[in-house]
Length: 130
Image (cartoon, rainbow, N blue to C red; front, side, top):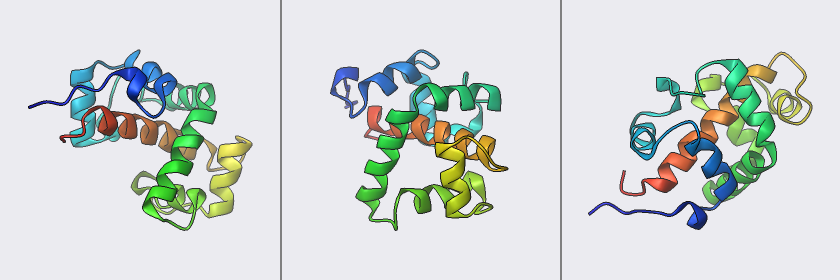
């Protein structure tokens, strides 16, 4: 039996609503199965993903902080630096600079990774059976 979760019952309803403006629930099931890097409306090009990150920065950072605590990693920046899509190409300092100042060589890649992270986490939360 499929579990239905209401948007207001999610950890970050504002972020969930923003993602649902780009994708429907069926698409989010596929995101939960296959990941964000499969190419989803609003999450393909850096222009879109960086803009999404900027618009929802505080919620995405709160989600990342919460997730890093849940996993017991060395911290949020270390967790992000380890994202598969970043290929461990950036130091923790470079990741921090990209997230908080938007400067540096890593800026677009890290902000894209953060938008994808938010997309995948929301998709997993809405589809706990996957």
